[in-house]
Image (cartoon, rainbow, N blue to C red; front, top):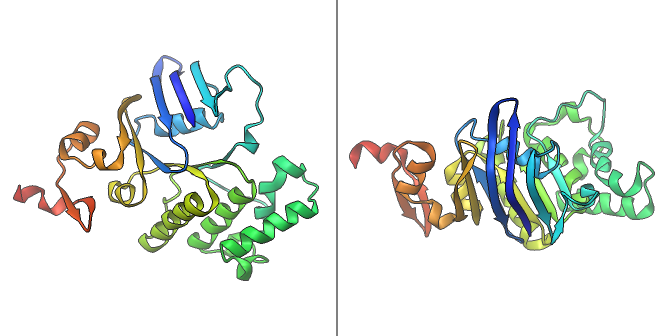
Length: 255
């Protein structure tokens, strides 16, 4: 389990995170949601130690990483929102980067075996030798997921991985993340915007508003008109369809 205790972050005089205390459960997809500018990406960056928090504690599997020099690259793999690769790389070469925390660039037979397993698992054999600048958006996201998987970490963190994907590929992405949880025993944390996607694929939700935790709990508790209005300052119409709660935005005027 990942726990944050009273985590605070600021940029100059601007408070970005204000005493964040949360618990991220194991073996689930946890969605981090909230309005633009709420602090979601800053929380993501602090949690993945891409930026240093100002105060508070981050505890991963009962180890306070604030007090220990921990090599998190063997515990958490991170896929950032923006991945701009200027190098002329093939899919295989990019995927192999995920083994760097283990091999330091000198691939062993075990590294090669892991790479082949993930190429097969994500059905990427037909693009393994294709240069990444020629891949479609959906293909590139699968290659990036393979790079994350070969890192072989317990926790996987993704910052808005559905950006720039059409609905088909966004749904495929979330279905893959669900497979990672069920079949590979991963714990997945996703920063996202779409409430209906969150309702369909996430089990646990953390909502950030104005740098503070506005909601934390099971997704079914999130899908409540008053709860959602409290997060986004906007009216919502929630209905249940086939056992899942969804937002029907065109129903607002009919309420």
